[in-house]
Image (cartoon, rainbow, N blue to C red; front, side, top):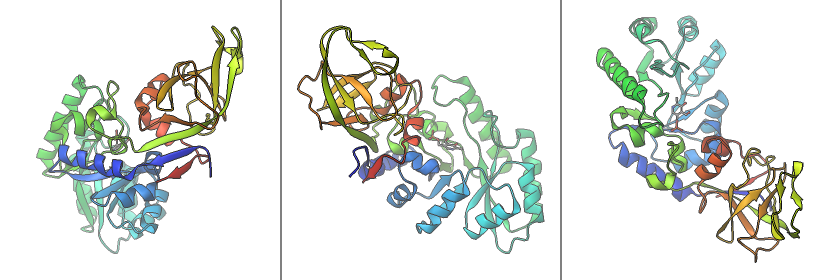
Length: 356
Ligand SMILES: Cc1ncc(COP(=O)(O)O)c(C=O)c1O
């Protein structure tokens, strides 16, 4: 059995899904499972979320994996297709591409579709990433409709740029633009991701697209998932590999950045950036041992980190250590590493074994 373990709590996933449902009771839910379900295991998450109306992914490989796992719900490929072969493949997999550029329209125009294909049309309302410009939408819709009656436009989709900041005036403008667009074109819409669902009621349209909230993590920088009544799905654990008494003035880890201010116990934990623990986690990043917090000291190594055990003098070799999850919000760890929970979850490496 491997020492480094990510425990995946399915009941927490179900709980979070229900919280999302209660926030958006009239919307269908496209559960975002891209990037291996934010590191939680694509097939496992999709099979747990039996009530999801569909799944959102970011590459064809993820579509194939879901279909191979016998997932029958709608699967939306957020990036769409880029070659005729990819279109054919998606069509055969009965997946729904997002159409966001002219190349895709020309591939569709040259394709010989034998049955209907559902598509979402993406619009840029301020994110500046994927999507047609607002002024192009009418023309794009008309051309798609004229291309083939087999192309079924499910609706218009857009993505917020700044909804994680609840004071953002840009978000209000983006919601208004999108609302006008839906009224003009009389189509269903999909706008809200997690921050929309939990922070911007007016962004809930026909479909919502939660990602990070499903996994129990807050989309907002100033609160944790627990504050939103969400439960962490992943808990990352390892164990204490060594305990030492270091004397005052001893230095710790590469570069000797931490110097013991007194004689003190330190612990070595079997986790490092080779497992996805962030290399830039600052000294003071919280770590949980025996249910008590201690602090990271010195630089994070590839396979190990070192912790200050002055607050847990009875800690012993073999003790279980929690890096984030149950009892230690990932948002706190992310902040100490100058990153976001999304990145930490997605970066957990193959060396960590996953348990349900
Ligand atoms: C287009 C789109 N919709 C929805 C999501 C889900 O966002 P979140 O994880 O913040 O809920 C993402 C994630 O990046 C996305 O790119």
